[in-house]
Amino acid sequence: MRVMSEEKLQKLAEFIKQYARDNNGESPSLADIMEYMGMVKSTAYRHILELEKRGIIFYSGKNTLETPLQKKMHVMSRRIPVVGMIVCGTPDEQEEHISRYLAVPEEWLDGECFLLEAYGDSMADIGVHAGDLVLVKKTNVANDGQVIVALTEEGNTLKRLHYENGKPVLYAENSNYTEKQRVIHPKELTIQGVALKIIKDIL
View 1: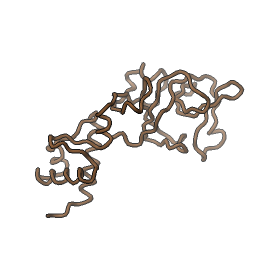
View 2: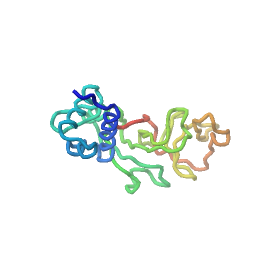
View 3: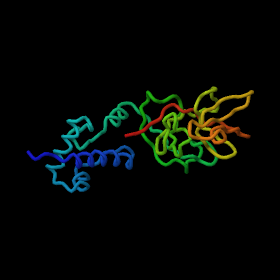
View 4: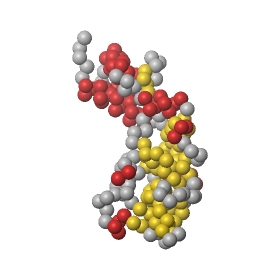
């Protein structure tokens, strides 16, 4: 039997993940895979089975492909809106700022939640990087030390909250920042949510 190319297997695995991201969690069909990979049916099928053998995907034999995280999400999940850093208003009230919805395991959730698409490096020291998704519990109260989504006079931001002399102070989590960059004393602050989890790869 001809040895399968590792490069093609990786390409197929990435295609399945990206297809699901772009199509609200749906899996590509065998025809989609054949077209994208430039393969005949039997070759595409062999590559699918090899990915399943390695535990990279699950294949039901009925044109249903899932990554391990997709499979977990589909067992018990809830559709959660993905929003960006908006200028004003709370994410759920501003429908135009919702880019898409993603299925998230119920066990990760706590009440009403949304997913925030991160950008920048201000929270890099706690593992939040550009492109990550941050799962946020919608609430207008937070405890000292929690990472929050805050609306200030400068707009929305993800920072750690501390109270100093009864006043809220926001801290960036990046050791490369100067003191001026790291500490924010907002004149106005509205808490929009508390961070629950950083999601590196939703699918």
